[in-house]
Length: 373
Image (cartoon, rainbow, N blue to C red; front, top):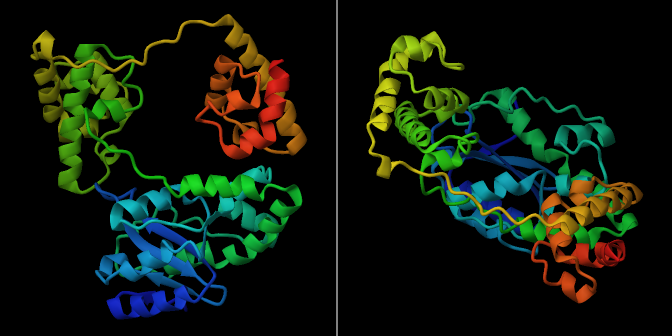
């Protein structure tokens, strides 16, 4: 049996929060059910102090508020690995903020690690082999299996000693302030509002014409209702690619539906009539009610900016090699394009680039200006 306690009631959670409040650093992780439910939710919280690991079950309806106070206390360092999704989930489900973040994945990126997954980093430095079989498990099931409990505990158990090693490397490379700014920005991460047509959140919808967009929207609305009814992710009803092909071809019969790429006979047997109803509804819409895909105005071609972008990419490649860091981590393409259009010739003009972080201005600013000159 696993020896990792799982806290389920308000009293034990409050007592554990008091214990965490006496620590200067804790490791945190969570597990969600995004692969299995219509509305994903946090199903398990993992905490490791330097001496022990405990799990908290948020589905048991114990009061989690004391843990929220701990997570928001900047005096207590919170070690995560790949914190972006976790921070968004904690804010969405519980209204929790994370302050005092230390993300070992970001640090690994800024140290130039080729592979930055937790299993890769722990395997490289400590020879720890993490069991990946529960990455896509349904964490909403109860009771959790012994294997799931062991898996969850391993995600935070090794982070304390990993920080000691990585932080020393950061100090040696003089990059502590770089990651601290990244952490501060990441602490503000939140899921975006999801209002508006569903096709706006569907990859591949952009090239469709207005009638096809209307058809796709009807199909997506039907799929969303069906996923909600079944309490499963929409992609488990039918995938986006299949729906886009149906919208593009607008079949009028079950036979025509079967011929659409990505729509298998079993799907037609189960949902064919509903899908054809969605297609029919869209085809009957008046032209003035058809949706349009919003287009960002195209920027005028700027040959000078294009030449400068090519030059800056070469400069970035050289600097990234010197620093032994991935070029995209050093400065991403969106920022490089903004620089090429601004063509700054002084440090003051770099301040007018909102995408540029302070550490980038300090470390890369003079090199950018010299490259442009």
